[in-house]
Image 1 (cartoon, rainbow over the protein chains, first blue to last red):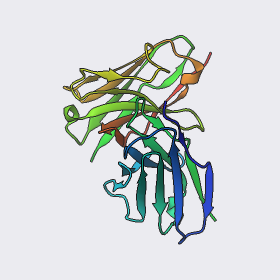
Image 2 (tube, rainbow over the protein chains, first blue to last red; image 1 turned 90 degrees about the horizontal axis):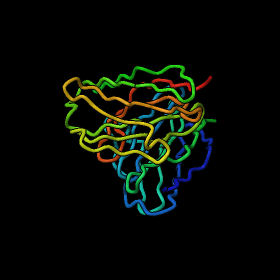
Image 3 (cartoon, helix red, strand yellow; image 1 turned 180 degrees about the vertical axis):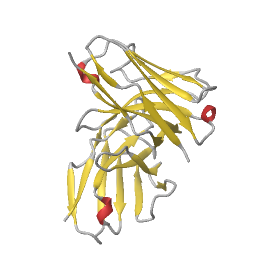
Length: 106
Length: 117
């Protein structure tokens, strides 16, 4: 299975820029997607196919990368962005998720 | 507005069965693949099953293959997950998701399945 590795946690101040990384154990082309999950809620799609903004998602969110290294960027960060962010690949079978990065605001 | 509403979760003993349902609305159900994804308490996400828009093909990870069966009724806009031989490690919130070309574009609120004696 394709293992996706994310840093467990990050802390930033409102107004700053934050980058959340996701590294795949093997190439996934551009088939990397990003989700936001707030406490007690279901995940929400933010970015699909590495760099495409999902419907209704603010332009503060952006994605980049291809192959094995991907980044989700939030600029500027707002208080409402406190959440856990997951990456997911759909290039290799089975579909797999990263362990999640918990974003906390200082 | 896309809505996915799961039902059927609850407490079940190890080795027993449970069937989840998901009623979809706000989109043309038979145009889309559908999936189930789960999240153990305090843990990450795990894809559980997918089904093509016609229901003709299904896909599973090894962790549930042979125990879980995904199906759909396009006339009723309903997705199902039959779970047999349940184990404690199947304890999780199960989310119904609309799958758009490999990404999980929409998620239901989830239904909690607890496997315990």
